Image 1 (cartoon, helix red, strand yellow):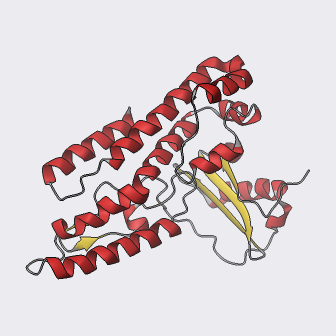
Image 2 (tube, rainbow, N blue to C red):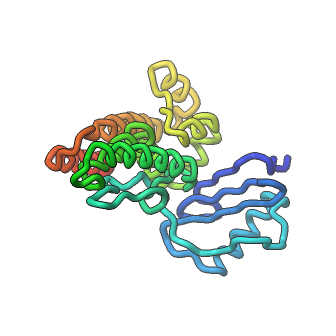
Image 3 (cartoon, rainbow, N blue to C red):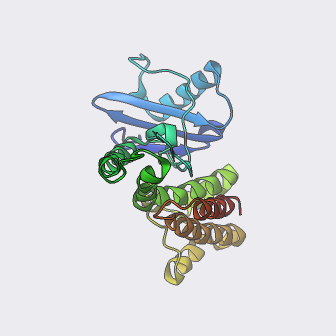
Length: 254
């Protein structure tokens, strides 16, 4: 049965690609992306396009726009994106969804938060209205509203990309991770791994118990990383911010 082109298809290890690929149809045009941590070349991309075309004939042969090779952030946001007279928004602060690289929504929300903080700062800090102290609430609010959830997605993505392709295939074939769970995770909501959920996954994936246990450990660690990210200091305190930053970076390396 052919794949539905109207859906947003996201792939890990597509044709051996060490990263992500996606395909979707938007306003009658096919949108395709290939991204990996290693450099890509035109010849590699041509091979990937042929493979994607076999999977999705709607891709077609004629390029109508795009086709660039560009570095993009596919990770959690930076832990510092404000300073004296400076505030970063969007890709400049790595405000993407780490599972698929999209980030327009996050950037729009961040822009609104920054605008609100700038308005408040211009009224309440007459001597130095746009110093790091005045702008810090922008970063704190972003992390509490969006950024902390993106930390969890980043950890989950790193875990999935650390697995062999055969383990990923097994997880999805046996519904150890379901399409709905992955879609839910891409918005920052947690994958359920309570006792009842774990028993269901155990029944489906008992032949690879170590893999199931590693998934359980990863999901538990996602919750821990999100909790640490959520504890970003609300007020500008350099020492407290340093401690928070170190704890967050450590949680991503454990």
